[in-house]
Image 1 (cartoon, rainbow, N blue to C red):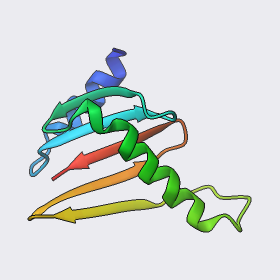
Image 2: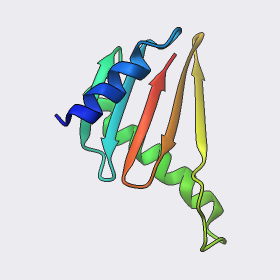
Image 3: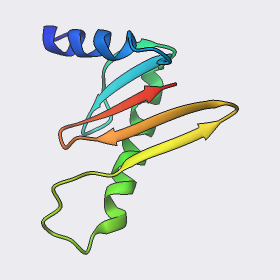
Image 4: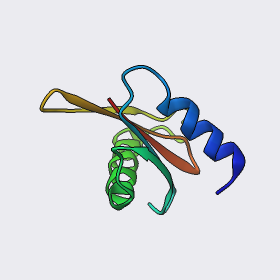
Amino acid sequence: MDSELVSTLDSIYSKEGVKGVLVADEKGFCLGVRGIASPESAAFITAIANAANHLDDYSDDKVDHPTINVEYEGSQVVVRNEGSFTLAIFM
């Protein structure tokens, strides 16, 4: 795993309230996880981010990607597509 990716995962995971973090590539392949995040969820999380990107298809010059918040049983997952990768933070 790339040292910059490892450093980023560790930095995010060390933040207060963060229970897990996952990074996946644009095809849903897991690039790295920390904490409660499961590598098996990478494709599903990427699919959520990609679907959210298509909600605003009328704009060809999109620069920003939507941020998705999923809440369940007192926990939260924040998902964001950054173009070539998707980030999920479990809180």
